[in-house]
Amino acid sequence: MKGLFPLLLLLGSAAPNPSGDDGKLPASVEKLFEEKGGDGKPILGDGDRAYLKKLPLHTRELIAKDVDAVTLGGARHLKALLSLELSSQAAAIVFSDNCILCHADPESQKPIHLFSADPKATNSSPLLNLKSFVSDVHFRRGLSCAGCHGGSPDKDVMTPDIAARWPKADVRHVDRTWIPEFCARCHADPGFMRGFNPSLPTDQLSKYRQSQHGILLLNEKDSKAAQCVSCHGVHGIRGPKSRQSTVHPQAIPETCGHCHADPKYMAGYRKDDGTPLPTDQLEGFKKSVHGKALLERGDLGAPACNDCHGNHAAMPPAVSSISQVCRTCHSQNGTFFDGSKHKQAFEAHHWPECEKCHGKHQIAKPTDALISDASDGLCGSCHAENARDNRECNETARYFRSTLTDLVTTSQRLRPETEELATRGLDAEPIVASLDELKDAIVQTRSRVHTFDRGGFDQGAKAGREAAAKTEALLEAARSEQRYRRNGLLVSIGLMSFLAVVMGLRIRELSRRRGQGNGDRHDP
Image 1 (cartoon, rainbow, N blue to C red):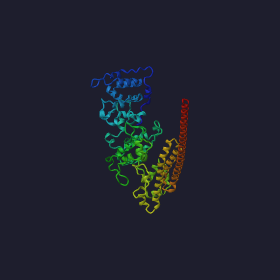
Image 2 (image 1 turned 90 degrees about the vertical axis):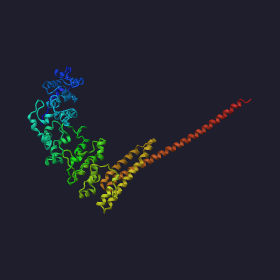
Image 3 (image 1 turned 135 degrees about the vertical axis):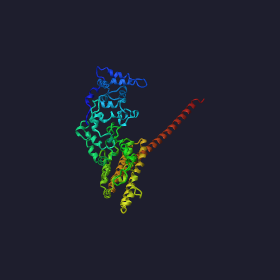
Image 4 (image 1 turned 60 degrees about the horizontal axis):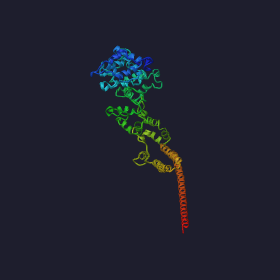
């Protein structure tokens, strides 16, 4: 199971064309360039030759050896492999692996067994995409066909242990219960996995056994239940950080939705209460505040399916644990709720905490409109049914809503004037800073709604009111400075105008006198 390609194969491919190597191709490889296709043109071209000449001598000799042994069947076979545009390191592995070479030969393999760089063009299985395979996380670590299928990459025939390792074809495609144990031969072995990624967990199988998928597959023998390859794939497995991975955070909703958003596939599955399992989760998630953050804005910190349900131990969160799941991110709201009266009421009624008000998959961005004591509002409708005789409940909701409305209205009223003062050359930075304090206080006040207590709520509201008053005072000081500047400017303009008039009159008087003096001198 754990047969690795000898990593020594890579030593000769670390740097192409070492000193003294002119890149000459072996004669048997050079001869392949003489082969022509059905159109009469050479199958291999100048680009292929240039690529081969850049490969290390060790790799070119490997290719020649493959040609001589006929494990590389000809120009068309080589062309298919060169279309992968492999690095020299990957090329060394491919051309030393008889499993890949044999199954990538379009002349000798039927489409059902053909490893192809373009499965659609060759009508082969999409699971045998050779381009995906050479990008697989296992291949990149030196683990290739023999690692899972058995046999030896240097043998030119299939050995009996290959067939012995797998269930028969008519069984393995119907009964999928063997897959988790098969993958766990490596992934549940800490000693083996330490050689590849010491931080990778090795408890996936034990978690999977306790998951809803594992219970269905292993206990109830339901092969429709998801197992390793359902989520990770087969030959093109990539790590979760890869954008092409089926378990990249942004890909997980579609990966889960492949089954869970398919009504026909999910038909017959039911929740604990006996109702049919819904299939609208993916559609709802895409519309939710979490879905928009993850899928539209690319915020990888936003939760996907596995953040709430788990990965290998995927289960619907129990009612009692929903708040713990939510507070993984929203810790402050959870802390406020823990000390509230609502905590006691929710536990008494066995209600899920956060979900009761915010929903599940289609969680909308919270707004102050949620806090409504109207009979059809969020707070009012619940109070009408469960707190009909307690007037304080709706009064508290009204107080929360009116306080937040006042703070938000004040912020919206003060900000435009602040911006206008800044455009007039006044120092508005202290006012902007004060407005930011008000904005932060509003955020804190909204969070403190989860205390469901006026005292706890007012700790945030008080900071908001103080910030609003401070902003008003700073604005009034700025207004006074503006009036002072304006009045000073008017006085200055008045004085300058007066002086201009006086100077004008004086100049006129001087001109008049000069004119009279000139007239007296010319009088006979």
